[in-house]
Structures are given as C-alpha cells and as structure tokens.
Image (cartoon, rainbow, N blue to C red; front, side, top):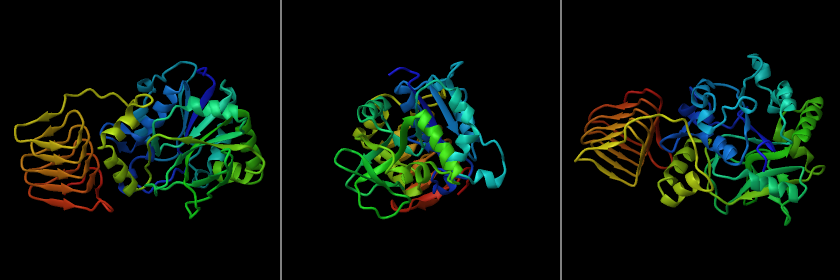
Length: 371
C-alpha cells in the first residue's frame, strides 16, 4: 500500500467516557494503560505500522495532556514536513457548537480533507485497544467493492466496556448497526473504525448537515445502510474496549497473561509510545514480585503480586500491592496494603493503611490523592 493511499483520522469528539476520575484532567485518549502507554498509542502505532503517513486528530475537550504526549509525532515517525501529524482543535469555545456532532467539526475543517492527497480516509476512536494491520482492511474493501468498511470484533462472550453491536449477512454485508448500547442479539461488535473514500466522506458530511444531522455513525452511516454497501471486516486479534472503569481494570488485568501481552504489543507489529529515559526498575533483597508488569524507574522493597506498576512507583518495605494498578510516581509507604485498586498518578498511601476494592468494583484514587 502506498504511504499516501490512506489518511488517518482519530476522532475524539464525544468519545464514550465513563472513566470517572481517570478523565477529570485528561481526555480518554491519554488515559495511561499497560505500564508505559496511553490509549492513543495503539491507534497511532496501528496507523503508522500500516503505512499511513498522514494522521489528523480531532480533539474536543481536556486535550492539554494529549498535546504534551504526542508532541510533533516524532515517537511515531510522523514529524514530516508535508504530511505527518495534525491536531485539529474546535474552531470555537461556544458551548452550543462544542455540543454538536463530529460531522459538524469535520465540515469546519473540510479544507484539511480537501488538501490531503490520499484517496481513502480511515476514521477511528482511541478507546478500542488492539494491534491491527489496516492494509488488510483496505484489501477487503477493494475486493468487495465496498462503499464503507467497518472493522468489527467477534466474541461469543460478553465484552468488557461499551460497544455497539452489528449484524452481518453471510457475505459480510452489514444489515444493522446498533444505534446505542442496547440489547441487539449479535456476536459482532463495532470497533468504531470506518474506511471509505474521502470523496464519499465529504459527500456524507454535506448531505447530512443539510438535513440537520451531524453524527457520523447514527446519521451518515446507520441511516444509509440500504443505500450504501457497508461491509464488516472481522479483526481476529485481541481487543480491549476501554471506556468504563470496570473495562479499564479488567482489560488491564488481562495483560498479565503472556499470550495476551504478546498479541497486543508485538503482533503484527510493535506499539510505540513517547520515549522517556529512566533507570531500570530496582528490587531489594526483600522484594517479592510475581505475575506483574513493572515499568522502569520503580523501586520495589515490598510485595507486588498480579499488578501493573507504571514508571517511578515506590513500594516500601512491608507494603503489599495485589491485583492493582499503580500509575506513575505512586508511593506505597511501609506496612500498607493495596488490593483490587486503581491509583492515578502521584497517589500516596500512608503508613499502616489498607485499601481494598473488589474485581467487579475496584477502588479508584484520583491523581495526587493522599490516603
């Protein structure tokens, strides 16, 4: 696939967010995940690994941390002069216009689309965490002469997180897309990834807005299933839908299974993130660590089991961390216990304290909290 065949769009406008304190000061795209990464790292890496050299991010609210994280796009080799990474903020801070759907914001930035050379556009979200080669999606798209291809996941078990279901016929043609998170009977889940010709997208934007409709899925795609050939592409790799606290916790814990970790971070290509140099993790003679992911810069003097620790976490002597996620620079002071919990960045648990949640409802501590 020529590098200019597809342009990527990461659509953060009205992205489903039930992550509570984890998104009080950041957008969903920059929620930390997997000890070193942010959610948007997976989307960016998938695009770059698929030969997509032009990526536009439609930001909406609370995007300061996103700007800090992605910078010029150098970590993903997107710091090019003519193409590369573009961040497209709302053109106004008017509350009424900010509340409008993604098609309205696409229209306000139509010059960006029209100036771009690629023939196709791939529109994604940030909360669908996977490792996928979009070149295969394009190959099927062309082979089936599809107007729109929707990337889907197949699962006979209920998934963690909120996702629309879809129905497909035996040829893969999508006959129904769930309008909201209801009770449709189907084993296929919409991964919120849409591939189409840029010309078609611009037509959908203008015709939908002319009818007073401004949502891509609900108005431009869902209402035109009888007019357009909309096919599903079934992704057969690992998928984590991260838009609720329980899905964040449950999918994070799945990373402790080696086969899941390898599938997500290395197959078919590696996942990249912002490089932060730091010392390796250190373990004292009394450290007791098992079935855990420990990032660089950590100091472990106590017990860590079945947990994920981000950069710079310090577990003091006598402290116990079990079934928990401790984000950057967390401090667990001596003789304290953390179980089934999520600590955001810079949380301190004082001496001789005990914090326990349950797997179906983990305890969540907001950023810089002292417990």
